[in-house]
Image (cartoon, rainbow, N blue to C red):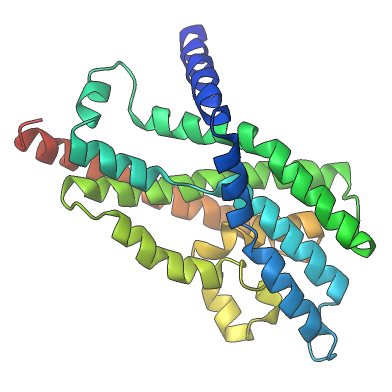
Length: 262
């Protein structure tokens, strides 16, 4: 166990040093995730008509929470894995005593630590511009939010990594992610909280993995009423489903990869 932790620590330190080298790029990536702030202005204007249940303060807090969640669960493993398979860079990693997925997973974790100062700065800027929306969640709510945020990231990672394994059969596995991104954008809570959806659409959406990637953790932080037990069950259900598919695709993909002469 100590050996495992030492390997994980080494990889984290290495990837953190690598990420810090590209501070300007990290800042631009953080800004690229500011779509919730743009949509916030639209929904705040809509709330002022009185036809929407949520107030402008609730919209502001929700989209800030959605911004934080998006910054924490951004994943790019499909593009890296696709490049490794196409260029043959996966072969040296297969010779190492650890599964190649840990390189990608720990690089994502390290990137979060490198990105954190930029996220904190943008949050402070948000409260400077919208001081009326400032609030301090309870300690219990913050801890629950952090736990669910980790689960949401892990679900997002395993989903995209599963799609990445199709790189063994196609050179454009990233196209799957681009198709997946459209319903993810509209149903995850990035465009709008599920409270503004029609009841039937909201109920159908809750059976998909999308709302548990952004809407669920954001709602926990803001304090929206939500069925926590059901949401956790759905996270574990989709996580286990994609994990099983992931392991099967990995085994079949390695056969395909070795068959190509790797």
